[in-house]
Image (tube, rainbow, N blue to C red):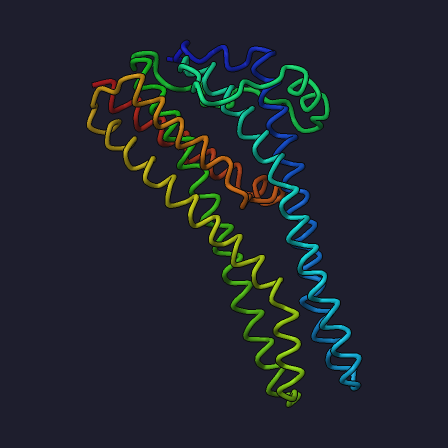
Length: 288
């Protein structure tokens, strides 16, 4: 039986918040993806250039260019954080309305004109039932909120773990290939030093992204574990505690490390299935 407490999640004004959040996150992801693609290009271009350039002065010039590019990449990376914060605050307002939680007094309310501006740029599929409508109506409101908060965090944890695994494996394979490249071609020490320093921004970017996902996973696992304990042991939970948990969810949503949309879409169906299985398990638990 449907839990009617959350039917207004599909109200037009609430859907606007989700559309606006999706656009803001997509803009932030777009900047990060552009940086990633550019660094991937440099990870191939630098070894080739250093291999074919025989003049040491030319190598030093290339080294200087790589240093300048590293600075520019750091500056550009900072510009993506603003859209991440917007995406997080739009999603926060949606949750607060749907879950009927008090607004955190230290947070600035969203600008309705800004919500409209971002939501009008949404070009994706129709958004409906952001949270599962299959939660039983026999479950109390606060426990239902805890269940949906849990599904929110567990969904994100699994997606980030899969993406982090891909990034780690890529770095390992690339580093092994690079080492083989040095050995087989018998690259001299100066060229190796200049090349590795030029690749520093490449390694720094991917390691920073991996660490960002690891931090977000750790924080969300703490939240998810706490909620799972409450849900499975049928403990009562007060609104003030749900608000504290929501604060933690909001903070993790501001994490700069994000999963690309194409990766999200590829795993969306399987992760949604896992979420529905958890909802069905909880419905059975609370039907006793």
